[in-house]
Amino acid sequence: MKIAVALGGEYADFLIGLLMEKKYKVTVIDPDKAFCEHLCASYNVNAVLGDPCRQFILEEAGIRNYDVILALGREDTDNFEICQMGRKVLGIKRSVCLVHNPRNAALFEELGVDRAVNLPMILAQAILGQKQEEGE
Image 1 (cartoon, rainbow, N blue to C red):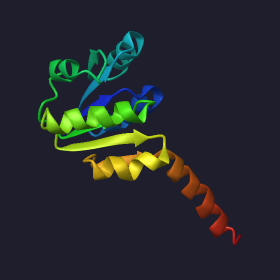
Image 2: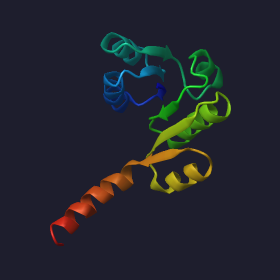
Image 3: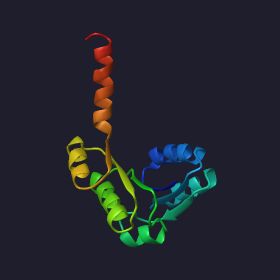
């Protein structure tokens, strides 16, 4: 499986480690030179230095027709834009993005993102689920 990972810092670092254990081909696109160097030194990945919100950077990354694009940035709009370009311009089969504003999750999925991972909702469910298990 070929997976493109855009942005994400520590989230990306952790996920890349898991993906590499599964022997997936991973390409990382990130504007932080030190982070790209760290990833190349730590894993057998292709790291592309640049802003993944720019179409020409994604094209230069060589990720056309990859299986998945994963956008892990801090800004929901950037993550959405990366996923849309990946799917509509580069023919990537699946798009997954991290969402920080819960209101954006359903909207992004309605607009074509395959999976919007709603971190605040996951945290809320973990807390509420724990309280239900404790009988509260």
